[in-house]
Length: 228
Length: 118
Image (cartoon, rainbow over all chains, first blue to last red):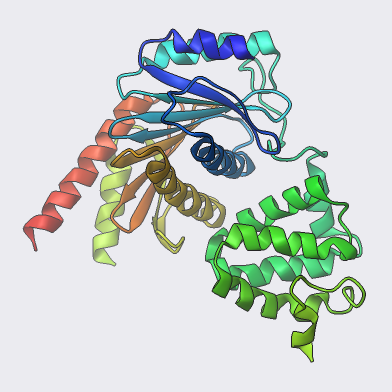
């Protein structure tokens, strides 16, 4: 995959690229030094979420491109949940870049190779795609999770479904989904919401749905007390 | 509402536009002709706002548009317009840069017209 970065760098207009993994972070980068690691991590995280959102709507998604006045940013999924992110100048030869990327994809035997539509999986998941949907649709936690998703809409609006599914996937990747690991899911949602006031309101909303299952586990920060 | 209808007519007249959705930046749908407005409005709002977030991370200026490229070639384009986002689902046979240019021309015309009317 490092060879992929080197090859892309030779295309006129390419400023540089990086290989990003949602759990492992930046794997490789040949972007200029001004792109420090915290920036790359933040950029990677946002771009992967955008890409995942697109994949949930378009199963045949091949690439996401963002166009700015002085630059453009492209993200493609490679294999094993690794993403290729390219930063280029506005005059970047997109036809040449697309051809190069398609050839590289074939060489890497990527799920995003143009010969066939990619499988319906989002890159952040490391477990089979239906698991998050399965948790939400059936099983002992379905009712609570659906309620959490529904209440999330009161806090973040119509983006709640995307944010909640993303949080579910992160929960699945970092912990065994069960009522005892609900605190982990709540922590992830707090990270996603990124607003202490909104999070406090959301925790009030979901407390009744999780009380019965949380009698032993408890919420972070002693949230259990709020129900009394 | 009449303005929205007029806007919708102008968008649909653009060569290469198959379907469109016009939303406020909080995801509220103003007008559309897509088959799945709820999921596309959420997508447009989320990615449109994220596009702005990326802009501040990499230190660039004006966010022009973003494009979801698909194997079917029915690409989905999102354009920021003040506090709104315009989502365009293009025809498979259309050339994306041309569609982008035509949509931008419409957006610029609207922006100029707004500025002229004060």
